[in-house]
Length: 127
Image (cartoon, rainbow, N blue to C red; front, side, top):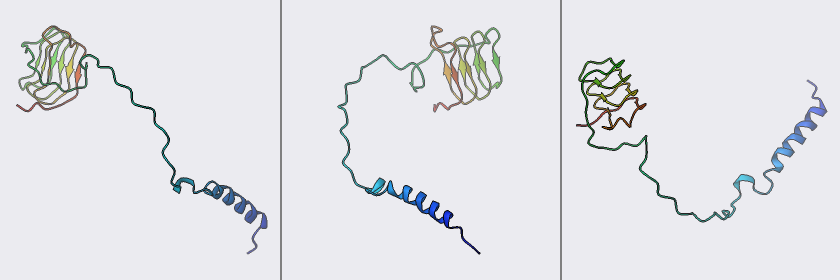
């Protein structure tokens, strides 16, 4: 079997180029950390608007709203217009155009219909 000399030369050149990046220690060398900018104080804003679990006393509702859907009949309520509860138990949707997909003991209710267009995928309220 005859080896081509050019193949050896090209391989040596490529390997040399790759290893030259590590000549000064590369990623293995210990270096001092760069200076970091000082942290600035953060502005304090209002209360978070969503995605945060807040245990509150919420008003409840009853009945079935206009164009509302209740899939699971285990104490689920869809009490406002175009609400939906797909499954689960003890779920209440009281503000319009909102839905709960499943879970147990979830509530979308503001008492002033300000939580409209809300969605809860699932969850479990420990009672």
